[in-house]
Length: 212
Length: 212
Image (cartoon, rainbow over all chains, first blue to last red):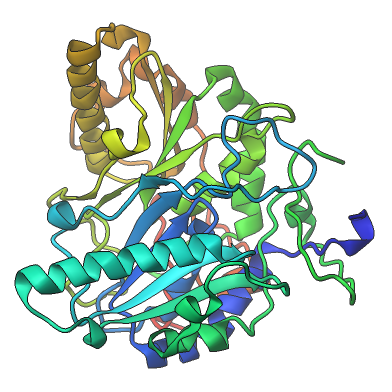
């Protein structure tokens, strides 16, 4: 895919997108945020500011780290190649943090939804955690709602279990996924450039050093 | 402290700061990054892009979450009040991630160094982890280097153990701490405003909803 099919966008656009979606997310009333790192870190932190309401506690951002998109241990290519395996690197430490998922509205944040594999993995694992917690402490998993916010939902067929991610418990996500936003990090950010291509269906990371 | 003593800065400035410091951090040769969340998330993710070198693996960002600055469970005030206790909310899961600190160059990233309490806690706990790992697996803790990057080092007396944080094993941090940068998140970001005050010694978060 050539340069003409890429879209570059600034941090400010991502922040603006977080601001725009914040009222909708406030309707969801999130109790906690779970950022899928590293890509979810920036939108999660921005979104937390946009969700902040005077007189109410700041939302906690928990971080989970999965290795699908990380491309670790391999050399970089010009285009970001999705990994084939999802591997847990870091997860919520329920004991240490004292948090559980029972009766909570849980907002999951990631940067890009490509094949939906990462999101599916994260959500299904969180649902397992929830089921376990409900069994141990008592509670109904149906009282927990998961919402998903991604900056950019790639307009492509989702390989894995679209229904699982988008069933009614994840009601917010269907609306979220309509939002076309994305995160590109690199030197162009500094220039605040946005370059649009009407036919663009896939966004690629602009990496430092891959081109100038 | 009045409005005139605040400094607002854009995401792009933070990114630029990361770019400027990247060559210095590359000399440190970090093997892994540890972001102190939520504040460290944005600079860590930006910095990772700036540290990326073609043909080399992307650095992994691990997240640790401490509660000193989070001000959770209390209502917000106009100014960010440092907490009195450091509490672990999330930590590196060495077993799950398969990582250890032995013979590594570890780059810790946070947003603001105020009293140095959080950084001191994080570093001293990581040193304990390292000692334990060296004992179990064999290794010399002296072969591990910790570097610290903070966006903004507040120009004030550090209450806790300055020497511990700044001893020679943390050689990079002393240089890092000379950099005056900072992170402010809020609507002004969108406007790309930077407002400088020569006498400003303390930065305050600009929070959504606290003023317009």
